[in-house]
Image (cartoon, rainbow, N blue to C red; front, side):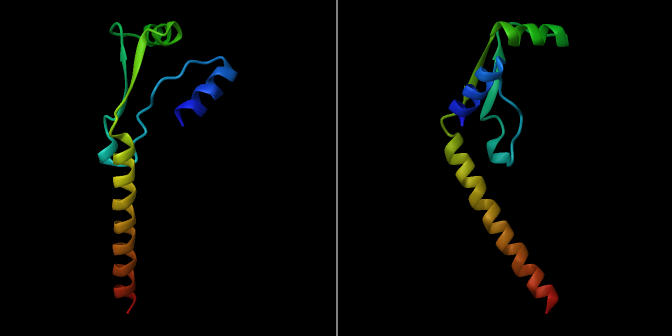
Length: 89
């Protein structure tokens, strides 16, 4: 995914930064940016991004955490379906 996003951003002439889109608490904090300087305004943040004055961090445990979150989601869905069937009876 990292390569695909990088190629897409390159075609658009835009930098890549990470986002805060976590789908499960197990994934919180696995992907984040650190900036060379504090950004106190939107303009400072924009300039830091455009100048590349930041580092993207991706935890080595991210693939395991994604897999674990998917497994937990599957179990929760199965339990919900069983509960709904019980209520219907």
